[in-house]
Length: 327
Image 1 (cartoon, rainbow, N blue to C red):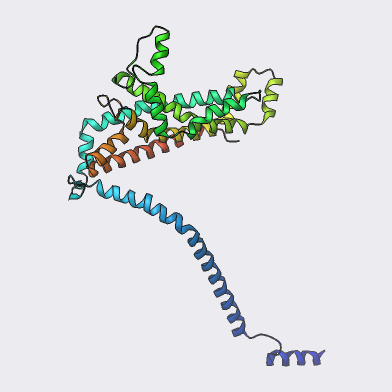
Image 2 (cartoon, helix red, strand yellow; image 1 turned 120 degrees about the horizontal axis):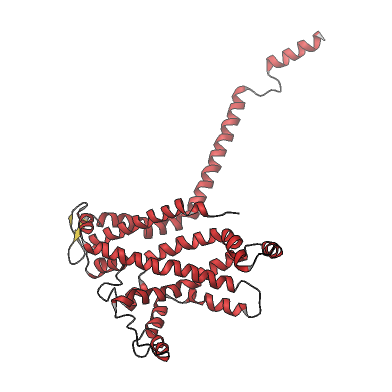
């Protein structure tokens, strides 16, 4: 036994068959370098794939946003060139003017007219076409059709419908002995007319979204409710609506943001008139910036609109999301 111990101590002393500490450290350093090199390659490859999207975001989102912040603190000449840096004077002038509050009130009225009505109408259509009766596919196609029609085309269609003498709406009213309505020329009717067209235009998207949400509800729940003696209305109110609340919440957020940004139909049908009765804040931004070349005032209004939409969206998430039932 003592012989074996002498041989082992001799081997250890000479370092036969065992790596030195320096070689072990060199191997670890090499592995660490290779690991860092692989990480850098993966990051570089990720940035290469992200580069096209980042370039687009910088060109069409971040740069315009920063440019708007800069222009909101300036006064421009009739050619649109920056003439003077005035800091927050544009914002002070806007908050002192009556026009901003008038535009915001018109915008809020437009939202109240369009968002709840669009959601309720689209939900009603999605509910009545959710059953699997013969011919429902045709109605689903018809109700989804507005999503493929552009704002310009839809506005022209409704402009013909709203025509005071040749329009179909006044023709149908004449059949029940109701006089013609000045849809687009009367301040009392202009915003309502724009809202009707917007409800129809939003119907396609909301109908598809809500129909998809209804299809995600298991059929077993309907069968269980029917066995328990629950009627269609009770089943819809007590079972379907809570399960559909995430979809309705998403549709509400998108609809409110879209209503704040409405422009095309107003520009084509009324151009903000008559007597500014349809002049929403986005159309006011367009007139100030691209018609009157007051880019400072236009940019200031755009930033105010951005803050309003942001705060309203956060408020909806804080208040309404508590009532959303996630499965």
